[in-house]
Length: 384
Image (cartoon, rainbow, N blue to C red):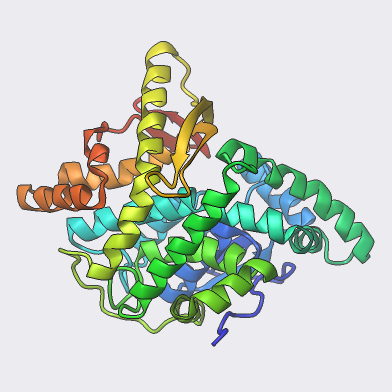
């Protein structure tokens, strides 16, 4: 039942003409997301392991900082953000579609993409650096330069890992919040398993953007890392089958309208919204205050910190402190734009959806763009 593909990223080989080149690594959260998308869409592409040489010769000159994945198009355009990759590819390779045609389905897809990309960082980073540190260090070292002796790989991996482990403090992952993070992850797995027992994918019979976003943390961190992977394999057999479907790649299915989510999806939606929506509201308030008091075009990635609650209303409830991130709102704008542009009937359905999942506060946030991405940076909307 394992079904996970073997490693897909290897040191650079000659890419066939007219194909995309995906620079990344199997251990990378966001590489897994866009790699699964490319496989499902049958888009001709070539995977290139992001070694030290690839960073030095391609990624740093094109993007400006060390980040993966990076997608190079056949005409040599560089794309760095997976949401932008999705928009670019979906417009040029529309079949099979992976964004529902109806507004409710689009809103849900963008909302779940945001939750999986940003909120599931908590269990993904916690489990990797608490339970699978040694494995991840060696992965990072091997990816950096597979030709080096193991001890040299380990030393390089440790140096790289220091930066990634540092994200835990920014996200509010510490000894005080870890019990709530673990309890929340186990509860999420139970809800996912119940859903995948009756539905092949999050929104029905075919994968959407939401599925690819969920595949990122689940496969790259929480399945592929050995200690975290044992939890998935023993506690979530239906979710393991979904990972197999996503990784093989799955057969092309029919993407139906999502006027009303499946009953088994509601507990997942409600759980994700419960703790994350208040965080988003606080982050947008901080962003609006910064935009009103500053004239700079480029927006910093964080704007101080705030107190947040995990497991609110449960025996696991805990209050922690984390950074106020600005990027989350750029992703949230995608969902809010769908709601703002929908016809009255679809707006009413989305409003009812948000109310039922406990996310009605989202619809009080500004739907007109406050920020945009340009040249791999977050910038004030409308600025030249």
